[in-house]
Length: 84
Image 1 (tube, rainbow, N blue to C red):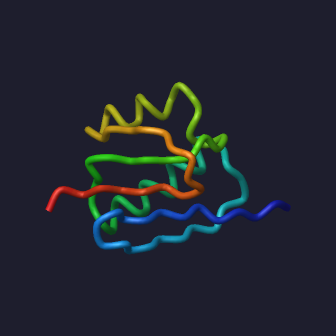
Image 2 (cartoon, rainbow, N blue to C red; image 1 turned 90 degrees about the vertical axis):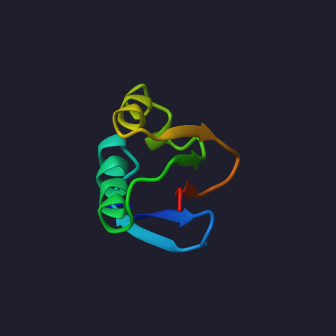
């Protein structure tokens, strides 16, 4: 079974959340993001790479429903930006 790590970094504080996952599907990605959000709050912006879990039509809908701006990048991690 494939094991992956979803890395979530708060761009301001540089806090890191690392989630073990069994894949990079959107459902898995959203589940792990929701875990981070429940601990740290919902970010204003998510910047992500173009991995499988971020390039679907459902992700913009998820972001819109939660008031999050989403932009792509060439990085290999997800960066959050919270409004303090």
